[in-house]
Length: 242
Image (cartoon, rainbow, N blue to C red; front, side):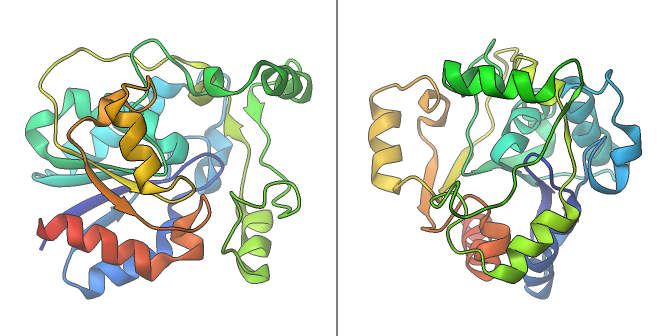
């Protein structure tokens, strides 16, 4: 039996992990899906002060308060950033860090920085003077690769339950101490696993932190906990067994 902490990506809460959580618990694992501050049922806490540091403390507080050890810490998409910082602070509590269609950004890089300049400008116009990043329209025509595998029921769920994301979770840079590294794994969904392997070998800045990682391919869209929850649980179960 393993202990999992599941951190969702932008706009989602613990609810997004429901089916994967059930699958993992049926296999005997202890599972803690987490809603970060300012999102989903905690959307009322989404003030301008909510930051990447806030979300990092959400994770470390859960691990410490629940007195968890040998944790497999899973970060999906934008959840990979607070997961990276939390792993940096809790290496003795973690068995492995798993990035689901995500990765450990280099020190000093923010998620917002990974967008092309024109996309950054578009988002800035959309946000204006606000402190929240609106969710997408969840329209498959706008993002066919990212939304691959999601049926109408899943898309309706995303439209109904996704909430704006605290902006500083995207614009604050990741800060790493360079301390002891926890073993990592990557679940590649929108990127073929062989391409990820090549980018790691070439030292691509967004993949260099996965050197030596255990790599798993799960071909689907960017939200596998909704498009392929059982297959995602299968991969996480395999990682736990390894």
